[in-house]
Image 1 (cartoon, rainbow, N blue to C red):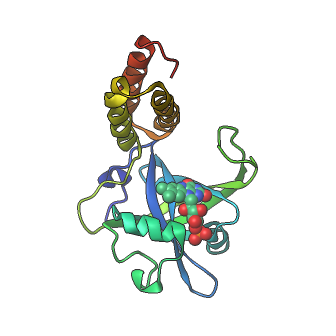
Image 2 (image 1 turned 90 degrees about the horizontal axis):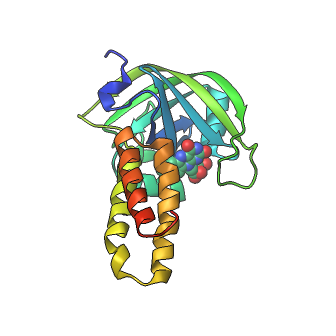
Length: 208
Ligand SMILES: Cc1cc2nc3c(=O)[nH]c(=O)nc-3n(C[C@H](O)[C@H](O)[C@H](O)COP(=O)(O)O)c2cc1C
C-alpha cells in the first residue's frame, strides 16, 4: 500500500495519540501510549522520556510499530501495566489495531523543552523515523486530543454561570490547561473554538 499518513487522518504538524509497540532483545513485546507528531506523508517524530521500556527498545532495535486504536482499555492497560503477550501479533502489531505503520529510526537526539510540566528538562529523546509500511485494517482516523478538550471545556463553560465562585476557579484552571494542550496539539478549528470560549470568559470579567 502507498505510504501516505493522511489515509489515516494524520496531517503534517499535528500530534496524535497512538500505541507504540516494540520488542526487547529477548523478543518480548511491549506496548505504550505515545504521542506521534506527523512530519510528512511518510515521516514522524516522537519525544519519549528516558526510563520507559519503549525508549530502551527503540534505541536497541531502531524500529517500532505505531498502532491506531480507539480502545480505551488498551490505552489504560498499557499505561498502568504491561499488555499481555497474547494481545500482539507475531510481528509486534496489536491484534486490535484498526491500522498500523512500521517505522525505522533515522535519528535520535537529546531534547530539552521548557514548556514541559515535568521536573527535569533534559530527560527526553526526540526520535525521527521513516514509515516503511502502512496497513489499514479498517477505515479509521488517528486520535487527536484537541476536540475532546473543546467539548470538555464547553461542558464546563455551560455550567459556569450556575456554580459558586470556588468552582468557577476550578473551571478556569481547567480551561488554562486545556488551552495549553489544544494550542499544542489541536487543529485550527479547535484552537479557534477555545479562543471563542476565552473571549466569553473575559467578557464575564475573568482572566482565563
Ligand atoms: C495518551 C498518552 C500519550 C503519551 N505520550 C507519551 C509520549 O509522547 N512520550 C512519552 O515519553 N510518554 C508518553 N506517555 C506516557 C507513557 O505511555 C508511559 O510512561 C508508559 O508507562 C511507558 O510504558 P513503557 O515503559 O512500557 O514504555 C503517554 C501516555 C498517554 C496515556
